Amino acid sequence: MGGPKLPDGVPFVKLLMKRSSILTTTLRDRTDEYKAELLRETYSYCKAQKILPLLDRTFKMTEVSAAHEYVETN
Image 1 (cartoon, rainbow, N blue to C red):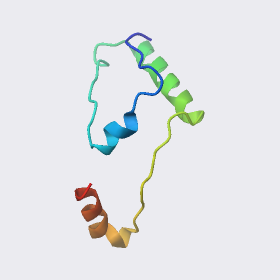
Image 2: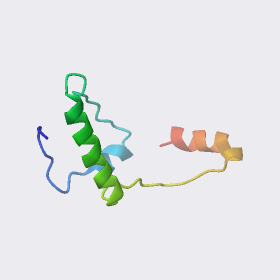
Image 3: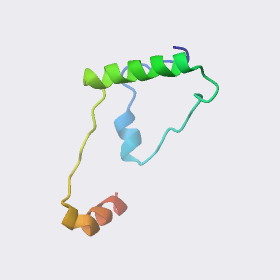
Image 4: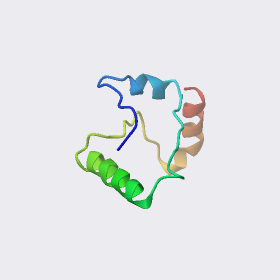
């Protein structure tokens, strides 16, 4: 795998809390072998629970309006 590595402690939570996003892709010109290796590496992080979702709150399906209001108010 190539590309820069980010150091430990990069404040991704703060980035996400501000509803910021990092959008990038370079996979179009990559080989199928490269994409497969990337998928295996990503899967290993998920399986080892090194990548976990952080849930602030959950809503019932009957509370869709309240969920939208919650998101809109940050």
